[in-house]
Image (cartoon, rainbow, N blue to C red; front, side):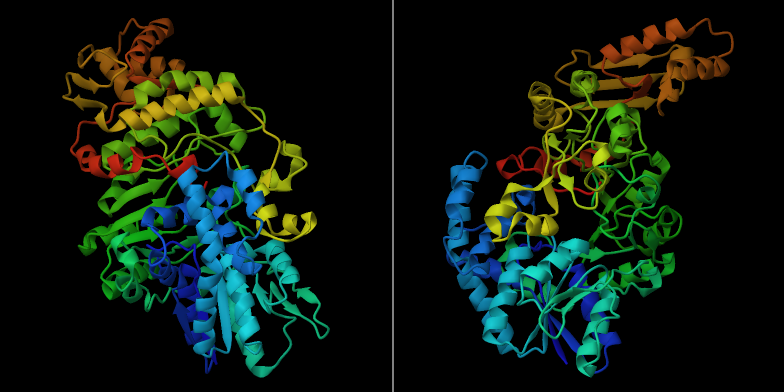
Amino acid sequence: MRVLLVNMPWSPIDLPSLALGILKRSVDERVPGASAEVLHANLMFTDWITQRTDFTGDDYEYYALSSYFMGCGDWVFSSALYDDPAWREDEFVATMSGKLKSARMRMTRELHRIAPEFVETIARQIVASEPDVVGFTSTFQQNTAALAAARRVKQLAPHIVTAMGGANCDGEQGATVHRNFPFVDHVVRGEGEAAFPELLGALADNSPLDSIAGLCHRDADGTSVANPMATRPLPPAAILPPDYSGYFERLAASVARNWVEPKLVVEGARGCWWGEKHHCTFCGLNGSFMEFRSKSPDTFYEEIMELARRHRVLDMYVVDNILDMRYLTTVLPRIIESGYDLRLHIEIKANMKRSQLRTLADAGLIYVQPGIESLNSRVLDLMDKGVSGCQNVRMLRDGAETGLSVAWNYLHGFPGESTEDYDPVIAQIPALEHLDPPVDLSARIAIERFSPYFERPELGFTGLRPEAHYRFTYDLPEDELYGMAYVFEAPARGIGEPTVTALNNALADWKKHHTDARLTHDDHGDRIVLVSRRRAFDWRVKELTDPFELALFRLLDQPHSVQALTRKAAARIPGSARDEDGVRRLLDTWHALGIVFADAGQYVHIAPAAVNEDLLRLDFMRHTHTEDTPDGAAVPEPA
């Protein structure tokens, strides 16, 4: 049996598909008599489109990620799905005119007009390769491109079995796709490395499909049947390493090689250990299975090393929703000792200690996503994040000190938040300009499928509707759109536009002035020297020499209340005459100087130790934070 796995636009071009890499290995190793190949149609698209338009790498990034919540990438290929180069163009223009710049609108309409030609090219290439089964992966804005290709393949060669899977096919979404698009023979819902090989085996034996967990198939009269989803996720030992054969060779032959630096995608864990106990209210990332499971440290380490050796690539993107804390004392020390100069990107929790961050940095971590999302404790409590505003600021400070670039988004729009939660943060943002700003301006939260806000209307969101872009992308009734959508419209909650504007003005200034701002401290034992270069503060150097003040500053390495600071400092400096009022006055002075951050009755100092790592970050951060995301759209980020 010949299986062709297809990665359509708008899958990222700087990363091989982890899903298809795993499926390829699953087919090759677990299905007797079957072999799988991956067709990198996303890379083929870059070559095809640059011969016809002035398309660039920035354009690809826009349709792949930046426009996700507006659905521009999916609308581009809706013309191919419905075989109409002018498919709902008037509706798109009417809805998006106030959101897209004129050049972006022209590009999107042109891509929409010619997308059917590309799908025709891909479909004919798929058919010419004579597969028995063709499988399409669909995540983020791949859905219409994958559906359009499956439709045309079925028209050209009805005997080829078509299948779809991926994040856009989880749970009810997958059942809705299968129910509404009869040219898709099978939809694999949930984790595919078990179900897909089972499907291939059943097809080869012509055996029943009813026992394959999560599979959508059709009965004898063509009615869509959705098997029950698996009740438990796959154990970590069943998660195979990916096979990326062909990706790097195809990238090297593509115009895309001039746009991106390729990275390997590695996976140590699935699910979220925090979300198992406290599911962040807005997060829908884990879909059907929140249960956290991770590969053994030995297995994960060997996978990382084998991929680096085989592909001679040192940049790696770790897709785990959250870092398995065991890896700090198992996998990462072995990476440090290996001598490989890896550059890793990973997601962590914001309350990690500085020593743990140092381990990350020593192991090659250059880019972390700690899911900060706010600097106010009350709003963070509404999210059920399990961290405080001061802890998040401490993460930014310690990231700067250890040489880690911290990527984060500022979110607003939570039921129960108020202007009073934001005003103190806005007032303190000028003091933080030396620390990593959010990737973009603040964004109102999107209501995502699988999130508590979606599942539990009592949390504040009722009357949900699929986002507008689904309505001008698909020819489906509202109830079917609801089943297929991942992002939903909801009444605005939380702060109003005046507060949003004030917050975003402050964040814009932060991004603008970040690369020129500095605040550091150097602890010499008997004195602490603070050096500042921030536009909102006119002082440049300050020295702390009083023993009590030295003790207080060192305690502020971690968030503390006034009461705790007074008690602990007095214990370190016996005989001190400072009471709580005196400590509070000193903290007020330091706060006015931009030395400490205050939130919810706690304080933390914001001056990284004077080390060389911050200089190493300049070029990276200048590139990241001095250019806004195209059209002001927020990039989707895991919680």
